[in-house]
Image 1 (cartoon, rainbow, N blue to C red):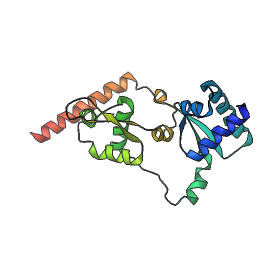
Image 2 (cartoon, helix red, strand yellow):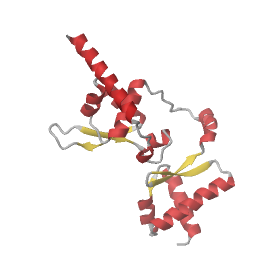
Image 3 (cartoon, helix red, strand yellow):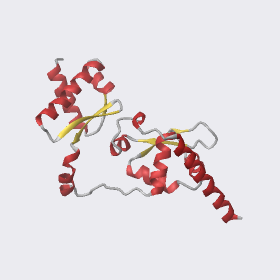
Image 4 (tube, rainbow, N blue to C red):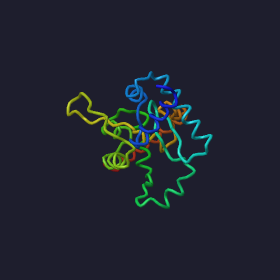
Length: 191
């Protein structure tokens, strides 16, 4: 398969699926090696950019996806009937941060870090498509393991979890002190 045909196949598959497709899967269906698929994808992304098209080819971890350019979102919201814009609460953001940095993680682990029940926050994040079930922990009760989704990566503008900012050591100590103070307050209220 020549490069022009490979680019057409990648474009057609991504358009038809409307979702991210792994480079491995594209290599498998085109019977090309991953290097050829990556090279064709780079050229296709460049083609879109040079032509000033309304779509772009994005990499999300080891997957490719066709997306509308971000600067066109205001036009999309004018036509979209069910605008999916969520306002995350502080509790949800805190829970999402724990999942992002500690995944795979159980609700119990999230709650031990936060110090409070996190059922509602986790459920809402799953509903929003930012968090998903990854399986079950091989432990008594077989608790569900949670992790972030590709939608999380897109929403926060990162290509992979490796691109998440590192937490500065001084902030870690601040967070620990705040958590200890909150725990002491909860204990004094219960007593």
